[in-house]
Length: 462
Image: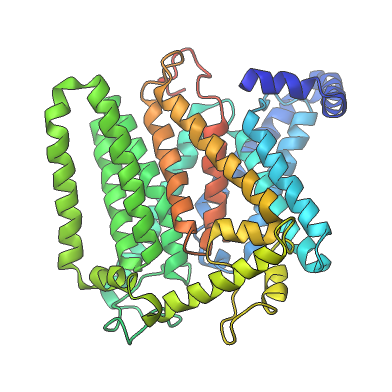
């Protein structure tokens, strides 16, 4: 499918001629400026690395423009480096088509919106996020080492935030807002938020890091690098504990779904390729279930948070979300073709016409519903196809015998589980569109979209 898409794209009358012209321009400059171009492309990668190292800093908790400028700077340097004859090149993927379609429907929705100026502002953010997909796939294209470096940078950031969260839990940090409903929860306990000011946002940041860390644990375990595997397993444990301390109910659901997906995938693989461990799989599964049950039983805060999921409208947070969902469904029903426009400002302008009095909102608290409201039914279908194809490719890579990725299959599994967990969390929360979470979403999609058989032995680390 990859080869078919690349051939079709290059033979396109419009896009093919544009890329042919760029290639001709690049070939003319390459003899004199190729070395400079390669340097600029390497700098672009280092800036992307800095982006994921800095993404948890407190100054970016509310300053979204800073992260956008970092992304734009990296993209600009990579493109200039390419035009100057840099040796790095980006191969096309069939996932690119659906990313471009997603960009296209956002442009159409923005310019057909009744709230044009607000939608154009929202569109500018979407363009930066979607452009990051092309940037990440470009700078991580040719090197497996770079892919590991970006993932380790992200995990280091997560670990530092987790330790800061543990400190907040120890001192019993006061909340920056009223997150709990005292009428249902007995005080709610301490909820950590580290540098992000919001426990749900912090949990949304941690959620994809857990399966990525577990995937890397299995990667190093297969390579028999047990010290690295144990260290990464410890990182996974710290991140899970930090998620528990955030008290984010959506993250609890996503974590359970993530563990279920990882457990099922590893069990099926072990059943097929490691017959000697088959008899232990039910025991291991039972022990994990018992351990999770003990956590719920012994930790009152977790009991309260999970119990509140079933409180219905007796819990103010549940009632608030239900009101927002109902109003958003009415918005979608009356704007189902192309949506109301792009971004939270356009949403707020339209939401006032449908909202339940006293329940203002910045978003729908449900990613598919958000896309439906902003981009209509076409946007929902395109986004579903994009995520579905990314998951399909990850599944294919994991089980592919022809291009056996050996230990790298576990990294792919971790990325797909991270994508799955982000989608589950996004069903009940709105932090998906915050840059600390959304950049990780596009990183996961980018890494899955990349070719992983770039070496004859994909198990090599160079």
